[in-house]
Image 1: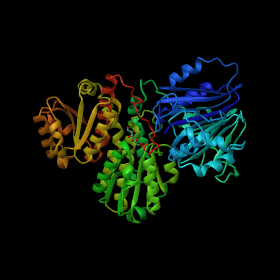
Image 2: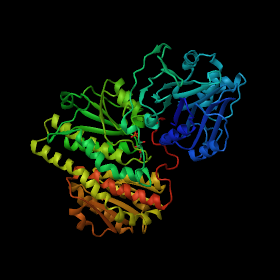
Image 3: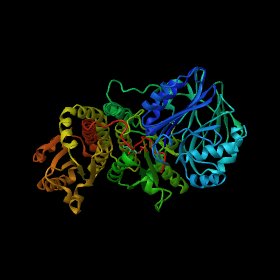
Image 4: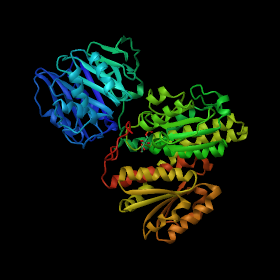
Length: 609
Ligand code: F6R
């Protein structure tokens, strides 16, 4: 993981590199660095910690000339601790090559051994340093020729930006299984891990294909096929949403993104509701195929997997179709029995998550049709899937997902209803009812955000806890999982989630006087069962925060706090219960003084296994 960026321009690029790096911090932010072409050669500046420290270092240096060519990197450590020496760029043994890298070289140890035997000294613990030395060894003035020689020696994934001493105005770029875009701006050409990092600097961009190569100068971008032949790349306009990413008056991106949820969910739902009917175009997925689906396999990671759990319950209950949700990191290695009438559903905000991509590729190898629910436009997942549904969450910057998760849920409702409709299991009345409720969902989400002050009062209690438990049955379990993950990732408080009936099979021994338990109880058909489980923890001294529909609040009045949701058919409950859960985690983390948008050890886009 990590973000890379490079500029070849007519004017000074230092501020541009810093600003783009900040936009790439979602890919990792434990250390950073840049390599700048200056009159005397190349200047490398690196630091552990946040980009502010890199900026301080950069500002402390006096340079007589403008810097017009350079590359930069923000890191999420995979090989070696986040120290200054492990920060990129990495320099070759002869000092002539600088490399920034996103990805993982799986055979780095082998390469290290080989190069060390030749007398080359390694100064970092990273896999990237091996590339710098290997490239320098084979580079005789032609990037493409050197790359063709070293490519067979590199196993793993990489997006690389390389500076060579003998080509002061050029940046070399190549990628394999790690994203890289090339962009044209006014008097400048650019490369980056993601268009949103440089959207304000460019008008046109293209995505570099696997094993393709490019040489970037301020005048031109030359693209080469995997065989080293020059090719005409097609550049398209930069999407408008990539050009302006601000907090819009909020203190954090996460809080802003929570606020945007209603509108973004509305836009996502509008993709699939036409003239009062469920009418979704999953980029051409034939209705006949939907009709004959035997089983839906779902693979996703983290919060997207929680949307997958909700999808499983919905596909089973609305479309009466077998469905299994599996962590993508497990699915890629487990024995799965696919059938040609199965559908593999991938859910991913970024469309770049390595494990989810591997699950997609596994399904394709097994001739199973793949459908991806993605948010990032032009992602690898989108390119490789047979069919796609794009959510309308827009750019999500906070590492902890909120609006993208809510939009994934919206997509999942549309898919379950489409499946039910194709299979003839949705009556006209049920369809009209579903459309009516889906249309109200954004308003309900907004009404829950209005409860912020009420929810905030609970955060003090949670901030003092050493552990918090989340329970719920069926769809409420999906919400419980998401609630626990949100709390863990931004507040650093231990949290765990369980189907409410499971707690008494062991974990209830952890419930003591005052232990916070967040209990979600919206599913009517098992409400009484959940109620009993809540009473069990209450009897053991738990401080219970219950989340339920308004109509059921009186049944939970024995709890310490009841947060009510607007009454809705309970199949939509996750979209509602998740909002107070997000706000609860947000205010708890805020009280604890944590960095909300960039929690420790995390990165937004997990492009490594
Ligand atoms: C948690 C969170 C992560 C992601 C997970 C998958 O707040 O954001 O758990 O959901 O890393 O990422 P995507 O959706 O990009 O595949």
